[in-house]
Each structure stands twice: as structure tokens, then as C-alpha cells.
Amino acid sequence: MSTRVALVLATGLLLATTTLLGAQETRGTDEQAIKDVVVTAYVNGVFNDRDAAAVRVGFHPDFVMSVHAENGLIVATLDMWLERLGLDGTPSPSPVDHQFRSVDITGNTALVKLDIYEADSHRYTDYLGLYRFSDGWLIVNKVFQSH
Image (cartoon, rainbow, N blue to C red):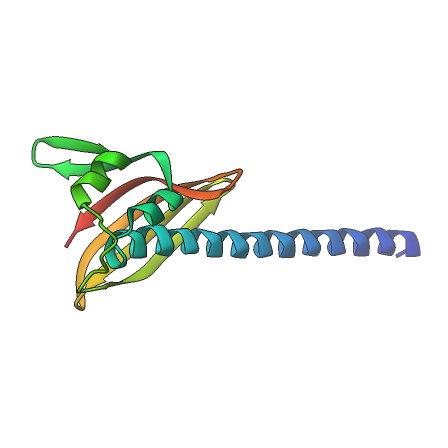
């Protein structure tokens, strides 16, 4: 094998490895940013701290939640949902715990599967959709299963 061919192959291998490592690093950074938004705005904002302002920071203003109902589907906007929750900034007397089941990222789109536990009881499995905007990741929709 000539020196020139070996050099071209080595350069290609180095470029491929660098690209792969860079993609893994970006994915890790995105995954952590997504988890931070979900914990701060959703787990703590909705359940533990009950802080509507914290929720609004991590949720897109056009967020919608779809609720499976007996006779169809109920769709709630962020304002409708926050009004129903009645978040007043008073910490919950029974804080929840959470477990990320998956974080799937494709480009500027992510889907999080999250389990919520209250008093060691599995309360919800949430599927949260997020998009990456110029100012970061925001939760744009939610569907869930109550347990």
C-alpha cells in the first residue's frame, strides 16, 4: 500500500471518528438540557414547587396536552391546564419522584418517556414532546397514562 493511500485512509478514519465523537457529545449535551427542562419546569414546577412561573419557562406558549376521555379526546392549552392545576407556589406536602425511561432525540425534536411516583406509588407515565428553539429546548405537548 502506498504512503499516499495509507494517509488518505488514516485521514478518513480520523474524520469519521471525530464526527462520531462530536455527535455523541452533542447528544449528551442535548439530553442533559432536555432532562433539566423536564425536571425544572415539569417535575418541580407542576408537582413539587407548584410554581406556574417555572412551568412557563420550560413550556412553549402554544403547548397542548391531550387527555384520553371516555367519549373522545380533551385538548388543553397551557393556560387551561395551569388554571386547572391552581399552582400557587406552595410546595407540595407530598413531593413526587421521577424516573426517565427514555429520551429520544432526532435533530431539533425530542420525545421523553417519564414515570412519576408519589409516595412510592406509580402515578403517571408521561410522554413529553419537545422542540429545540433558538433559546433552548421547550416542552410543546404531553400525553399520559394514569396508573
